[in-house]
Length: 244
Image 1 (cartoon, rainbow, N blue to C red):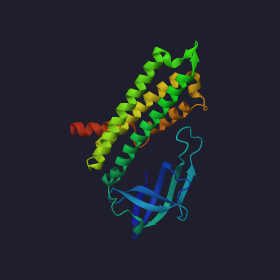
Image 2 (tube, rainbow, N blue to C red):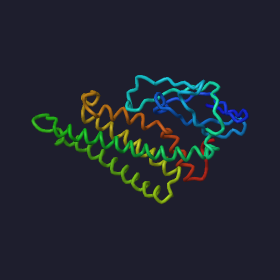
Image 3 (spheres, one colour):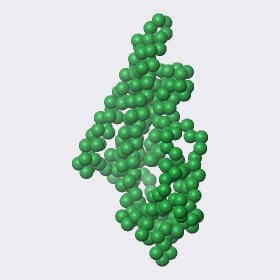
Image 4 (spheres, one colour):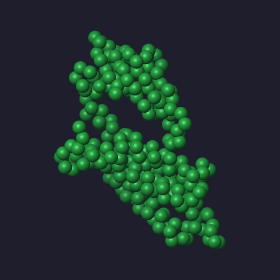
């Protein structure tokens, strides 16, 4: 947990943040920290390269989402002026507005990941010959391809409908959680079936499916776990909170 303590016109931040995208190279970070005075979450703008006490270690050896450089941020008595505090961010509810859109975005990412895996598996099955004919002609391969396109179509329908709700200003936290949970879980199924179609080649870096498989694992867990999204949806359904 990162904490914030006010000292006159300055805030003092202490704590750590892990898996922060682009942290190793960006110039500015938005740090969310809990104010020890009122126990509310507040946001702060921190200039990475000129602020004493702020350091970042790049997380190495990732096997998923390698295009994103993630960092482990450490804050030791980092002093931030009051003018660098986000004036509209005064509670976790304000933070949740950001999470709503990032979770919604992950639903789009995972749907795209599933589409990529499906397209790669379909192409492979049409080109891979066994017993003198493409494996796409086999019943069990067609069954897997059909299941994949079913998952993709359902995910596409959900996120398009939620895009309409967002345009109307009606997208809720529960909507975003629902799409994140559903689309990532269906992506997980889909990329596994794609790997199955490729057999041993499904774990070889020369083929695209292994990358989609690994990327899906990251999408499934970040911006809140599958189970956490379901609890948000459950609260909206029942009116009762199952978590503190």
